[in-house]
Length: 176
Image 1 (cartoon, rainbow, N blue to C red):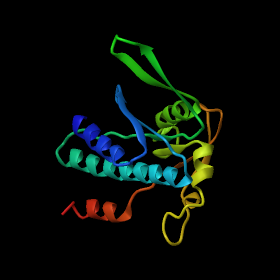
Image 2: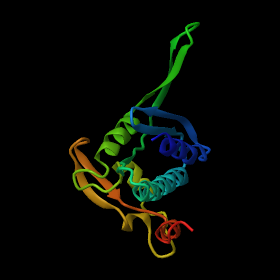
Image 3: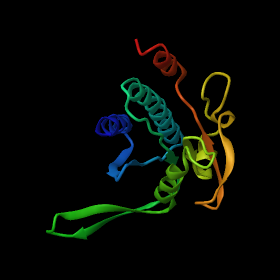
Image 4: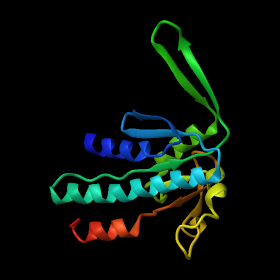
């Protein structure tokens, strides 16, 4: 688990817009500042890379007779408020993120790979801001996502199992 978390954190840190990365229990989260739609596109690309990496990691675990695991990746977007809170002089001063993006992403990540949801699940705000971006020359991201009602958010969300094909082909060739 430590190796997996370390690699995921490395992927998340490469995005210049990250503001906070943390671990809560068995969950890794990242909070980003995304002033432009292209910033959301970059975050989705990170989610796709993490999904592909997880496939490779599970293959390595399986080849070495270790149990495998599944992940859910939640993506939320909204206008959120950031407040620094704590008591001066105590060493406890941290940011509090107030808004729906963090809460939505957390809830959606718990639905990924469960209840007939695919691993990458995003709220409608995130989806409508990335749907026209091109995943490749022939398809936009909207071609890969399915719409499904989220009981946790009580709204329709979008989910997919996107991976990087070249990376996946390398994994299937035995990572050689």
